[in-house]
Length: 184
Image 1 (cartoon, rainbow, N blue to C red):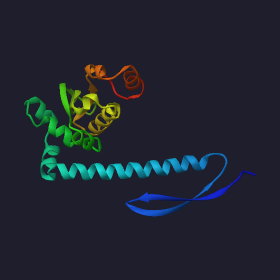
Image 2: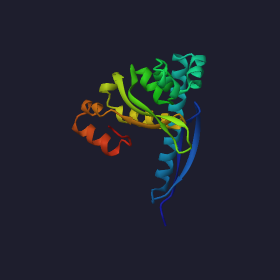
Image 3: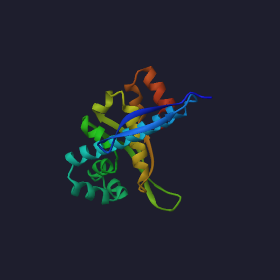
Image 4: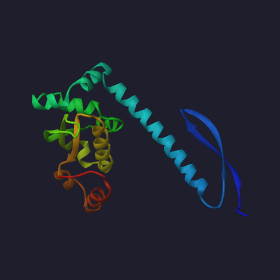
């Protein structure tokens, strides 16, 4: 019979302290469940904090205006609002970029036709500012890619291979193998 015990754990949920009782067993299933619980709570807290930071540092009316603009039209007219409009479409990674003095740079772009027949941008992006030397850049790249691909006006997101020069050998190997992004 597997040894079982009750553990009283304190967890932070929606900024209130709750007690959670978890029944554990020797097979490790509780550890996985507990890990999933903590992961979900941390993700929730990080998202709330990111939204707070973005709201404090950006005018909601301007963000709304930028999100309403056509990325394709901004690109085709070489409008300087293209990068701010892309930034406005970012989720939690936007707080990290803006909070640490970083920015995205559109190295190149082209208009492609999606499978649905719509025009959308294929982007090659670079990072600027503090992001250039940040050890968290691989996660930042993935966040940028995933957030932009949610938008129907973005067909693909790739990153400039020149960014690989920022990383030491271990970081470069890691981002190429596990980063989930493409460099060109």
